[in-house]
Length: 201
Image (cartoon, rainbow, N blue to C red; front, top):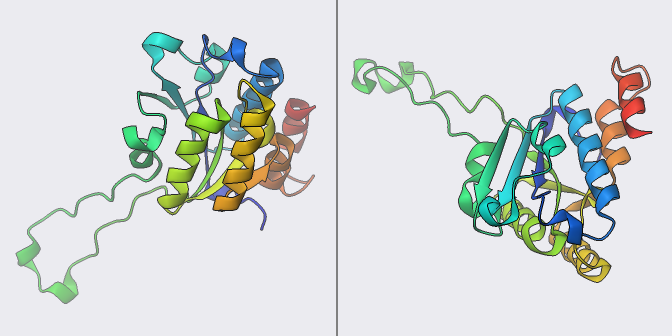
């Protein structure tokens, strides 16, 4: 099944100043995260960031932070434990008025959350720790999870690849930055095709 741009949110996990120098192929990983975030912003996909213990590990790289609507500071390895799910799935607005003022069959249903985007495209560091635990808990929360492998990193390839194996076994889709970009576009006729092409090349 193709990734639907209108059903997606992007989460960029822990591309932090004191962590990135230890990440295998860090420059490539960070460049793909930035490409992914720029494509998302161009196509109106919400972009969220997370930072693990920012007092100790620093903030995300400025180019990542600038792409995020909000950045969640966390101490838990899974961002879900510190409130990410509430950001991704806002609670329905409360119904106003006196519930007893009308018979039940005439009362309006409570409005649903405005943004029912159920697919989370996620990338980040370290793949086998914060990315893995966040993605697994998003799956448990019944999101469809798409992991962008070339924008993920760990200190070692072995840890990164073991995380990918576990995520695939748990039901996450494993993709690349370009796969996401071109599935979001669907066609060379898309008005943003040329702009996206410039970002991914």
